[in-house]
Amino acid sequence: MASHSTGDGGIPPRDAKQRGLTRFMTPGGAYSTRNYTVYDLRKVKGQRVLTETLPFTPEEATAAEAAGIDTMKVRFDASSPESAIAIRHAAPNTFMSFSVALTAAATEAEAVRLGYDAMNLGADGIMCQWSPALVRAATDAGIPVQGHAGLVPRRSTWTGGLRAMGKTIDEALWIYKEIQKLEDAGAWAVEVEVIPAELLIEISSRTTLVTSSIGAGSGGDIQFLFADDILGNKPPPWPRHSKQYRNLYKMQQELQAERVAGFEDYISDVSSGKFPGSEHIINAPSGLIDDFLAAVVENKK
Image 1 (tube, rainbow, N blue to C red):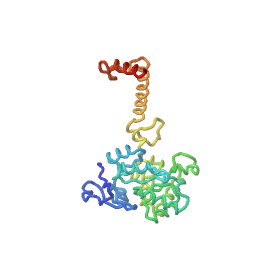
Image 2 (cartoon, helix red, strand yellow):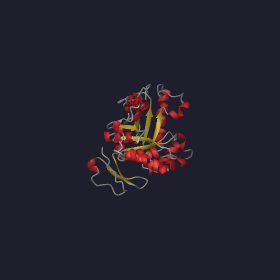
Image 3 (spheres, rainbow, N blue to C red):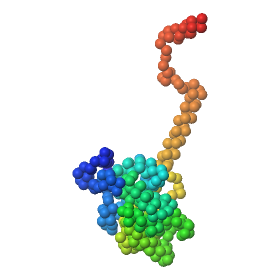
Image 4 (cartoon, rainbow, N blue to C red):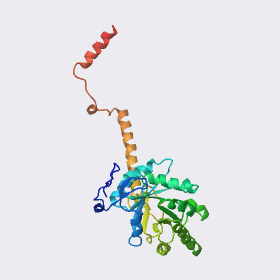
């Protein structure tokens, strides 16, 4: 999808709908266009599975939008927001939640402030691992919140580490109740991580929340996979639930090897006198050096 950001903050062009975009105003007061709003995403729940990724660079975000990824997340640090801002600008028309750290807010007031800061920078909502109390504070302030259930990595000390969740009846019921708490707190969506695929199917059909599945099968409303995994940016081992559609890591290693080889060849040529060669230098015009030497000798008198 091509970028059609207004840039100057003016009212978006009226042909946005013909281009599959919705005109709206962000909570920060900027006119913009998006492929989806929260309203749209809630309407398509249960109708079809959407795609979601988390890009780590503006280049990845631009590519994801051009390919037609439905929604994105981006990591957001209010003390150093430059990366999130750059990624937001790189994909101006894609619905994007800013993912905030568990420890970024310690009080309800801080949760609201952090959410507002994110949305002032162009977030369409926030994604968090917060308690229902902090989620409720943010949603009461009008901030769209996506919660987190199942394997919640930053809370994994309470659940036995980084492992699949929901494989016992007690855990399955606990996950369902956690999702109900987020629903009651006003969240619009929930990321569900590493639970049995069949369990997510049943839970997703029993909640109004839009469910984003990562490692939880195809029974959610959104299928989420990190850009690192899709593009193969890192070497194995890879997460079991991931799939590498490209092998950019191999290409990066090959590119780095070419860099090293280039420097080695340069050093070798300098040492052997092959560089610079006649084609790399400028030859003095006839008589210039003789005139130069004569002038130098004259200046010494």
